[in-house]
Length: 579
Image (tube, rainbow, N blue to C red; front, side, top):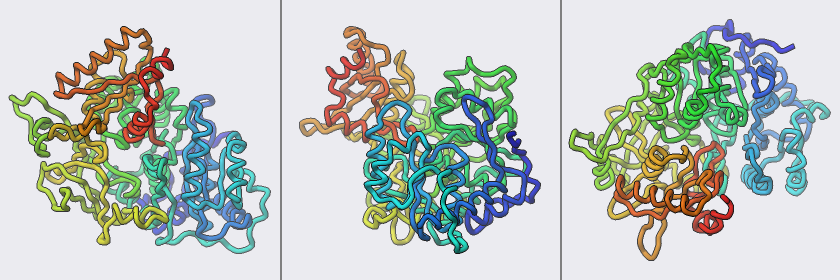
């Protein structure tokens, strides 16, 4: 019989003021809260109180050491949304090992590519063990043998291992808590090494200042544990605050987005985050909303993980207002794995606040000047709040000079949550992390009073005809104005062609198979970009599902560009595949 996980722990709230993750779990285990697991089929399918998690993890820690693993070694684990993943993660903490969450296979095909990806990540992390769900073990067995792993199998297989005799020594504040492969690092893996004290600093700042967690809060997440927002934001942070967590596998959310909202409604969830596309999926599937949906308890509906789209959020707020959702509950934020997770939060209960600027002045001069009544080309950017206390944020030009408000430059951050470095890659670490602790995020943005405004990734910026063009502006124009083109169906980038920059726009042409219809679509997109952005572009139609995504589900423009240059999107071949 499943145990119902209560919302109230019965303990005095401690908002992450612990030295390590095991200290946090030791305290949470004294209360009644824990994790509830939900699924597409079966509803509430499992429960794990923090008390049971602590007991299981401590027992597993002895078996990990009994299997021959030594303190400090890395333990790779496929990060499925299951009790066994959570047990293995915390068993590693108690044994002084370094857990390394890895992505699950893509939902459709790609078996060979996935095995190669796991091989790269296991090699890069120098893992001595690999845990995976039973159904995936046959895929990875040859790899495990080839690498000579000490331990390979399911977490349940550890029950056959004789526990080690020595008492496990948990990781200390200066030890590495885990390795996190950031979502864009799968081609050239770079494991972000995060110390225990950095994790606890970030979780405490999120609880105290970002979300102001309180007794009676309950969290809900469908975000994957191999992504920083899923792992830190909705496993480690709630646990460090003794809050209960409702969890849904990412694949189940993708099939039925309304499950997210149903669980929030049924269990009176107060805190839950998503990239913009999650909110958009719910709007698209609004006809499937259950009767009696009640979102009135959802006090912080967070945003992060990709560029925040204010139009999408306004539509979500309007669509679900009748279900008790408040637009003021939306909370934009900014963060990245290299900063553990969170860097800044917008103020609670203010909703999505934007800054509307003159787009042409931004492109030509790098100044984010407010739009006026006469401004023809304008753009809204979302204000992502001030840095967390104890953290600094600076905007700098290419020479490293700090810039004033409304001047776009590279975003640098410094503070107690910053990573130790890229594991085993000192040269790569030195490229982004200075000796005095400043992390170059690789993002572009500007300061507006005390807040940061993100404009895009530096590596994605299109430089053409003396203008700095943000690719998402081109993509959003097409998605919003061209019938049949959905969010995520467009990738824009530039290439060098005969010494000149050429803008390329790839579009997943869903259901458009007739040659004349395809030519009309290409002409419509080219005309739109010419009229709205003053750009000539090469429009290429590609098969549905062929635009590459990072492990967290974000479009990878850099990968799409590489595929295009490598001939993967030959127009003739694309037409044959779509047809």
